[in-house]
Image (tube, rainbow, N blue to C red; front, top):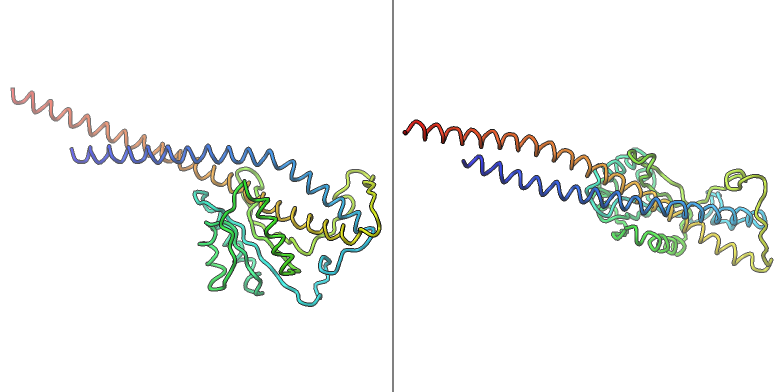
Length: 282
């Protein structure tokens, strides 16, 4: 009888876990769908900024801090490690840490480090070690644009010349890949990379405003580059969490079926034994 009670308690516990994982699965797929709706708008915004920045470079070259002049004095490097704010997303963070360790950038240089995502901080110590780093714990769908603005202001204030980001991006819904993205200095794409067809947009501007305009476009380009990396990480995180919670829900269902079968067999055996004892006593 005690084993029967134990099985009943275990079944109740697993059913509760299954309800939790199923709820997390639904939340993840809902969040992923919301992000997918925003993806087109973000890509269009990024395309427009790149087009305008490209035309502006044709008028006047960008300042030295934005160029590919790696010999510039006072070179400063910043590394962003972008993980998840919450857990329950499988090996999402661990795979990224393994990727960073294999890349070796943190071992070859001593850059400043910013870790993004509360859950990522525990993993980051594996590659950061005892070095100090800044952290941004609050990293969600609601605030990634604000976070990119804070990072842009910090990069400008500290005058970083090289900025790299380690993050995940969704190659497909079921496959998340780790990547290293160079945010600064900017890449200079060819015309065919940003313009559709052979026609370039015709922008009008005042010559005396070029310096202020160039500085403003630089901030926009930096901000949208950070937004894109953060957005891709969020998209990959939600997909990874759905896959993890879906597997957990299915596993819980399999365990429940096996335990219910054992429970029913044991219960039937106890009933049969009691009936046999009752009949034998007559």
